[in-house]
Image (tube, rainbow, N blue to C red; front, side, top):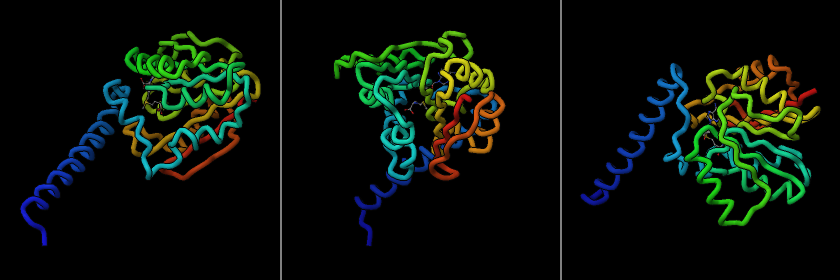
Length: 216
Ligand SMILES: C[S@@+](CC[C@H](N)C(=O)[O-])C[C@H]1O[C@@H](n2cnc3c(N)ncnc32)[C@H](O)[C@@H]1O
């Protein structure tokens, strides 16, 4: 039997769950009309390793990238640097990671991590997709982890990424249904193929997955 205090606790938990579900659904509905990027003050949510969506964990995504020391990586829409830091450690001092984000607030969080860990192979780049700030034929890997759904002109962004990759370089797209901007694998595939990519790998399931594409 539940007593007063237990009941209040249960009400608080249920209210919190309902609150977050309503925000997620509202945001999802709103984002169908307008692409609103995840705000920097919500970056703590991005950093949570959700136990229900293993495929969105940084270590799991990185395992599918076939990284080599010395590689040049672009973490497109890096957010607070959840993947940027482990990527930089994996490619070593001979490699480099460019952390690109549209929001300076996100890049400030990456800078704080770089300083805290004295990492020397990360370049910060504040840019919005389609601005033409990417070097051509420069990267071995480009990551779009829960970013594609936030980009209004997805085809132009993918074409820009295609041009920025070296030949046989890889684009890796991760999507998870808990993200209000979630994109289905079918839509991701169609867009990537239209931009010139060839599909090379699918990891996960319909609700949380990584798809890898190659620039032929
Ligand atoms: C949900 S967060 C994901 C962050 C990170 N990739 C991760 O998984 O931890 C999406 C990030 O993409 C950035 N973003 C969204 N649209 C963008 C665009 N068009 N150009 C550059 N960055 C963008 C946002 O500012 C935000 O930091």
